[in-house]
Amino acid sequence: MTTRALPPVSTLTEQQQRGWHCIWCESRLQIGEDIDLGEQRARPVRGAAYSWFPRACRDVAACTGRERDASR
Image (cartoon, rainbow, N blue to C red; front, side):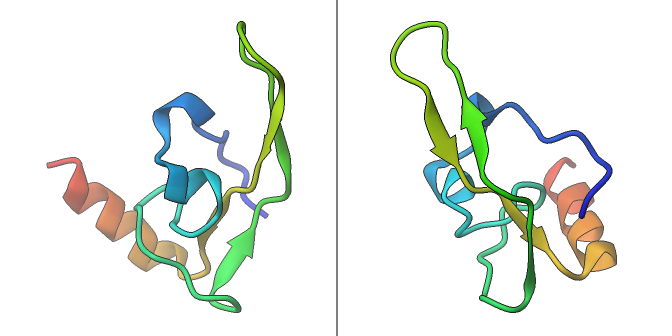
């Protein structure tokens, strides 16, 4: 489990919200090579609440490197 605060769901792509891509570095994830961060509930100001399913890379060091490279 991560100790980082999850980013706002509104800033994530559909692939990140559905757990297909890492919420931090946006890499495509494979089952078993990821960390499931648990079902989350979003409660938008307008519209109905909905669930989203964030996942992250298991290799934290590689993920951090990709995230850092993407922000340059």
